[in-house]
Length: 215
Image 1 (cartoon, rainbow, N blue to C red):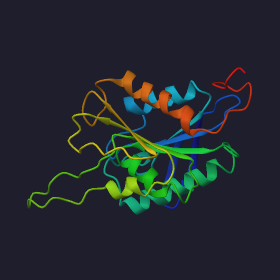
Image 2 (cartoon, helix red, strand yellow):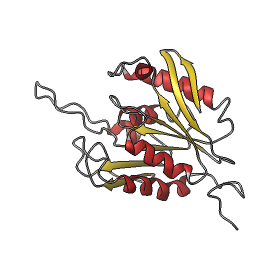
Image 3 (cartoon, one colour):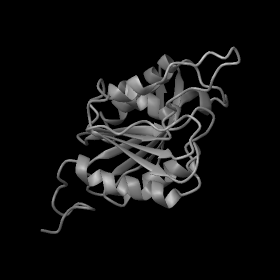
Image 4 (spheres, rainbow, N blue to C red):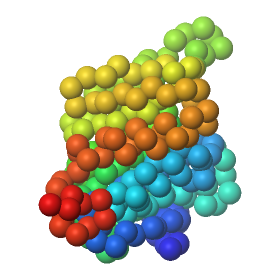
């Protein structure tokens, strides 16, 4: 199901895959230069969908309009927030929100999680340490964005990611998989990490819902 929703910075496309009897909704954003067809986004979506979780993949307005370079992150946050608020007032109403995304989309999810009452956050290839500038100055780490998330968090990171691998801590699980920032080397491991993590962070599913216990 394709939805077109207005945001303060243009129209966003939402690819919605509702689950029958869903007991949560996973909303995912894409990376800076990529789209919602990234293999790790698809793997994570499939893993969550198999457990009775509704899926929404959000295409930011700049991508919808054909631009490849993202706007400032505050604009991405505003568009993301507008989309979430509309989805959870209609199609995803009354479902717990699991916010997430890959790379830049993961940053946006982390930075807005508290304000949107997310119950958990899923980060695929979180861009922890920005590349060194031509001047030689090392940009600041983005670990503070992850540390600010107060709900259960899963970070799926390639063990050779040039952006680095964030540390695990109480409430934050870090799953290291083969490969680099693209997470393409072991897509099955990406899906498995999501499947293993979800049961521990979601509310108890309604009896009879997909993925619910049979006792």
